[in-house]
Length: 169
Image 1 (cartoon, rainbow, N blue to C red):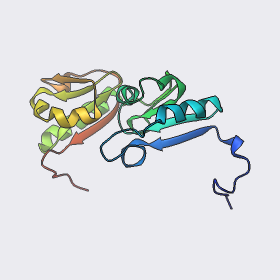
Image 2 (cartoon, one colour):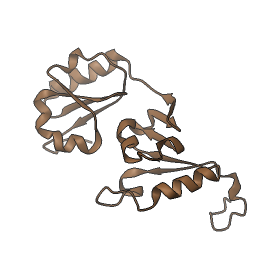
Image 3 (cartoon, helix red, strand yellow):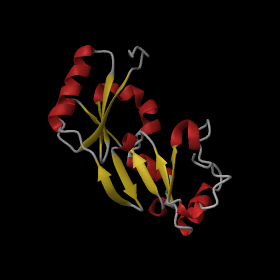
């Protein structure tokens, strides 16, 4: 049986501590706990890497930890990209033809707003800019385009926003 942290006498074996952001590390108002930067620095000094894990893209996570992003890891886009101490160590890209097919499917359905999460920005249709306040919660860099089917960029996540809350299981 695995000992819990209060019983483990060999905590020196810990190398990484990962935490989800929303509903875990972040408070209800979206704020990071006070002194988190200091705690991450102390972990780093002890040889333990703190990893912030999120569905948010790397550029959004990096803005949440501006002073210490090079002393920690960022697992972004639901694990599709991992940066450690400011360096990309893993990424999983979606082939252009696959995300183009998802865009066409979403547009044919007509209920959702496709959001194509690229390495440098999130690409969203210009006609969906009216939801900008919602999108900016997750994407700090947005490029609005008239036609997403013209997009040909490195992409690692595809999501659909349903403004009328009419998604299906």
